[in-house]
Length: 83
Image (cartoon, rainbow, N blue to C red; front, side, top):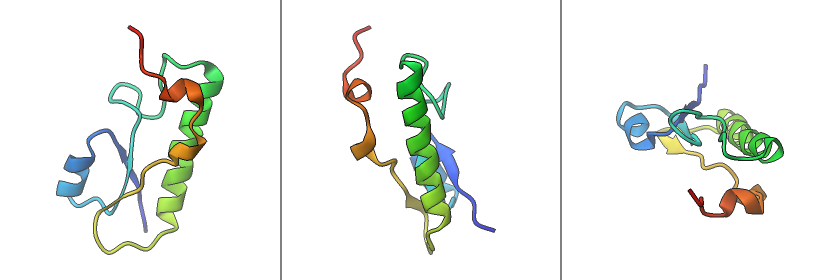
């Protein structure tokens, strides 16, 4: 059965042999970002999950990283943090 590992540590996932890897948003909140507005966070989650679903439907023979589709990122997510 195919699986996808959503991980912030993609090099480790590759080293341990995970076949389908999707980079996570962060260590504390892998599928979210508390600093985003609710709408932007939902869009971020959707991109990560859609990337994972695409990875599940793709045949792979070696560890493969499936990056979330950045073309759908909102302007707010791509702005640098001002903290």
